[in-house]
Amino acid sequence: MISVNDFKTGLTLQLDNGLWSVVEFLHVKPGKGAAFVRSKLKNVETGQVVEKTFRAGEKVAKATLDRREMQYLYKEGKDYVMMDNESYEQTQLTESQIGDSIKYLKENMNVQVLMHDGKVIGVDIPAHVELEVVDTPPAEKGNTSQGGTKPATLETGAVVNVPFFVVNGDIIRVDTRSNEYLDRC
Image 1 (cartoon, rainbow, N blue to C red):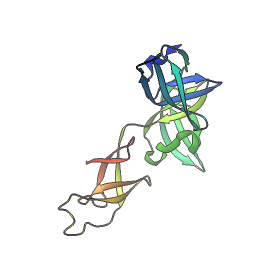
Image 2: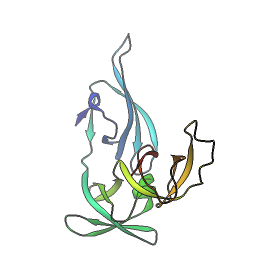
Image 3: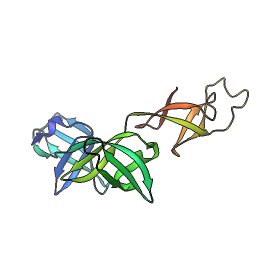
């Protein structure tokens, strides 16, 4: 059990016979009345987002998650084959299990697979990845004074806005949480 006063973004809870992840939260202490915690929770399995209010100090059940480091090997049909780095067992995951981070998934990349009661509930990829630019328009003369950006397609299919000086074949570092260009490697 955990107090709602100890909420953190990304914390996984067991509520109403389901797993919920804390998306955002706010401690509210009104001038009159008792304090409370207003939160936005996302269902891990369905993706449904709800707003829920708790009394300050209320206890909720924290879900026990097992994190396993796995390596992405290859795509087989619609499934993605992962190998457990400790037991070398191979597991097939679907696109829905991996989620939005699929656009940064590169072969031989190590990821954290989140499991609850032996069932895969999500995949955490590194915060920053280095990917090659495969398609971006050439920079036009005169557009560089304001430091603008242009779209670039990466080797995994993700599209990121990059500065004008980035060209095809460059390796760039991308923040996977915000889908932003960080720097050129």
